[in-house]
Image (cartoon, rainbow, N blue to C red):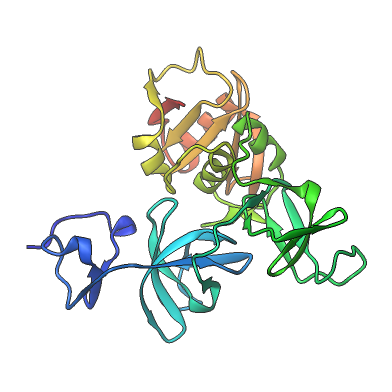
Length: 281
């Protein structure tokens, strides 16, 4: 009998499923996951095996991935970070080893073919990308894919002390449904990227975050403080202070700061209804 499971987090489709789901979901075959790692700067995770399928989220360089099947250039995978399931281009995946040693702490940086800022760049890397550093050349770190400016990176164990400060750095980033890089973010992607920088596990979607993060607060806006999360049906924002909210939103089409009271009134009238929850980490 097939169990009712969240399809966003269940690596199963009619022809193949995770072997750990045997007896819980119906599938033609059950397989053990093959560990892989993202080897491109960004890897889109889509809801179907097509470049035209909707973007659900994004993985970054160095992210760990469980692979279940490949066909026609797409891989059916589950992200290790948050359990999200979908399809990404198979070319984005490579060997799981070695483990990343560093992470990008600048909003974005460049990958150079040589330790020389005048050389044409190979790619840009987003905040949160993870790197395997094999050496140093002057002010640059050497990686298998090229060179990165060392001051834009930190050891993999580095944790930001104030996740709201990371959100402030991202103000002005364009809104992108499914985005979780410093080139484009949606509301829950902003929260996840900021908490990841602080070393705090975070689910991907707003409803998951409202259910799982921190402790619930009374639905009373008095007493809110920096870093508290405010939830609507399908939307989330982070308090910058007791009165102002940082959130990626379609109204501004960007990560923006605005008075909480104004956001609550506009959202109630136009889209997501009333605030459904407040959480404190």
